[in-house]
Image (cartoon, rainbow, N blue to C red; front, side, top):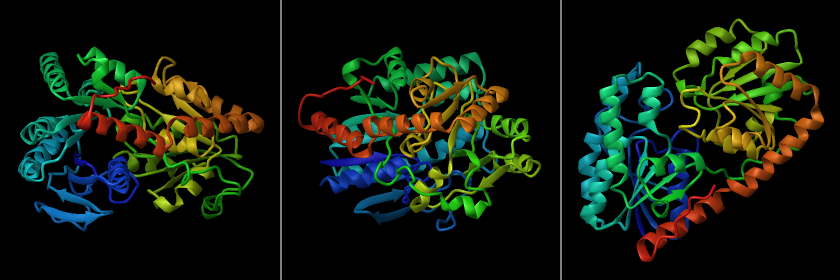
Length: 415
């Protein structure tokens, strides 16, 4: 089967945004399928073009037996509402001829990843010209997020954008998303159950495993082995509601046995760094190598999963899968009726968004009850093994892709 993957972000290394596209492409090739990718050069989360790439240039690469076409895009230094749209539009324009040229290859499936929804028309058109199946994977509802977080404003603009979104969704042969609640939103936007597929973020449970010894990161950061580490690891962006972490750290300055660690890069890093410089119990780390991911996640006694209330049920953070696989409990800041809460309540604690006092209390409770941490951590690992193992998740995707191309669609919307 020939699969054309169309995604703005595609990571040649299995870290950061785009890593799922990279892992999926490599996994499908390993199963005997042919995969091509049309994407942009790496630029995220630093919002700066990777030094290995020159602005305005196209690239053709070979990685893990995957052919990768990289089309240029404009990367703003200070991303905002309009700038983000222009940023994604630049890739949609530059990648258009690259996508059309793939018709000569005649793929069986054109798999478009949103974000960026602005690329969806090109993915759909390419599929129709190739007589291929068109698949749109919705990683988050970017239109809803943009308006709820104030990145875009105006009732008329919102109504127009939602109407265009609905029209696009109804064109594709298959739509997928990463959680049960997000599948429900696709149904509310006009899709039918037989044309939707639950495709959650996954984790390699053989690569990320519960540590049996003390993480080497503790010595590197000067953290005592007996201290309780509350950690966030991921993109430092606007959807996370990250400021609740330093606020909780300030409230727990009287507990020198509790240390906060924030690991990652992104637009919020300078602000977090300025706050961390004033808090002796808060440490910042840059993005770490993939081969140390298990050691990094295992440094935590408690994982922190803050979310902005405006975006908490329009996305399901990919970082959650790794947290669960590490066998550590999770504290999420979200409402109880969200998908995040449905998962975390089985293996951690849920507090209200932006409530730093409640977050601090939850951290203290888990710090003072190691037996509770152990049980919740076991629950987390069991959930990862049962629901988000990479071979299982990608295997179901492969079955559905083959059903789409060679037979009747299976369809899978159950969570």
